[in-house]
Length: 257
Ligand SMILES: [Zn+2]
Image (tube, rainbow, N blue to C red; front, top):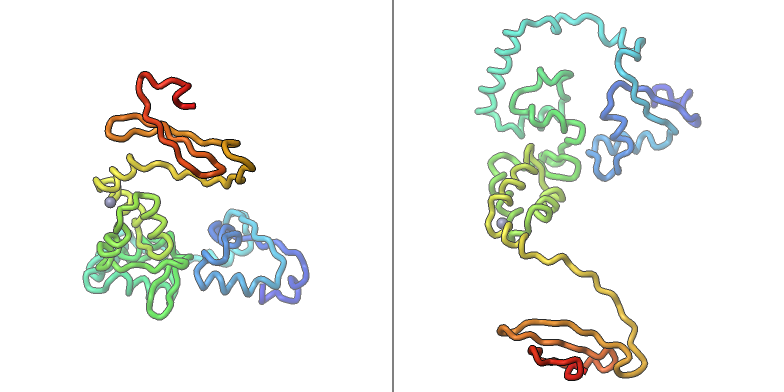
């Protein structure tokens, strides 16, 4: 857009791309994008454009130039296996976050097969990853290093709030590949969380009620049980005065009255 500024500025233009994820990124709430994408979108704000997805095979001109033969493409499968082996060995030496930070800062390879094995779980998230002050971020979430994940899980689960609350808690601050599954499994295997879930009453909404003009204009009633006895509770909306009547088989409508 900046390169063709004089042609596109002030005009409604369509940009064709064969990179489908990009189309979605432009419609996503800007706060959920990585700082890198945020900067790109802010820069593009001066233009009126629409991103249109077009399969690579239909983007003939651009692809003819970008797909010129590359000897690297014809590497044997064995060399690929060797590469993976080296990467796997390296993962024991270099923590994966350091590796991913390096990829985020210096660029990812073009193909997933060239991505170092320990960084592969981050491949699908690479567009949302960024770094800030040495920390790895996914959107606004901090990527939690492997060594701190179990600690983080404990904190997320603290208080036994059940699956949805724990997930909500995690999603607002933390991320690591597979964290949703791990939280789900943890909660599913936790007796307290499961017990709470079964015994939880759905929250009732509060409805404000107007104060009546005279006593007994409006009366609320409900039954309750205490020490194996049934009671009827009646509250006058005007005086807020509660009346409790013990119920028995002989309680008649008249007694209640
Ligand atoms: Zn629990």
